[in-house]
Image 1 (spheres, one colour):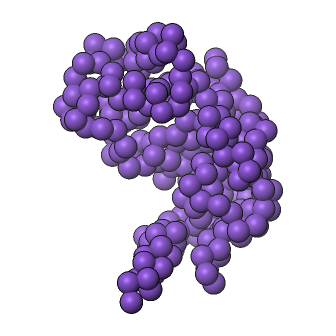
Image 2 (tube, rainbow, N blue to C red):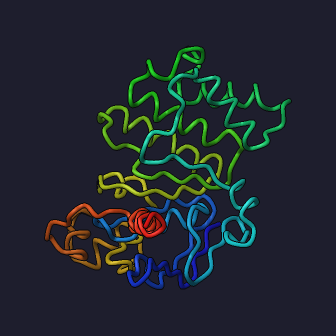
Length: 262
């Protein structure tokens, strides 16, 4: 369902992603883990057509992400790390707008929106403005919205940041159900390693732009002779603290804008 071959992304002389390859099967739950600045966000941006690779090939649902952008985009839904809902619209209006943008058939639109809002337990708040929602409710709405066009793949970029334990558990129950019942492929990133240990079938650990290990949680623990994924992760990536890094894409665009203003 996802195929990444020898993928590279450079920003001038800086290589953010350095010849990585992996594949994700239909219905598989795949986690991309790594320290700050490891290349996770850049990889997701390339997979979701927001950035073009410098080298390599990407395929989603059989479509070439660079050459067949429209078909690739229809194949996935995405929940970004940062909120992307319109706070001055209702939950129902957010669902309708997203459906229109993706060309969802009008005859399916209302039925599909109702089913998804019921799935994430927001049907009784469909007419409430999003700005009245809690963080957990917004996350649940973003997942429902991302599924409106019936994608084959769901990307989740740090989906549970700032949520309480109960809401995190509820969200993962939804996601796991999508994988098992709908055979949806789930691709996610998280800094909560217990989430990856409990919810990923396969994990790729990326550091300094390179994939350093791929396997199931049990495989990684066995390889490193550790008893938890967190300990395995630390053994593979080291225990030194990583500083937050500016997204190289944004830094590169800022430099270009600055040059153009001279």
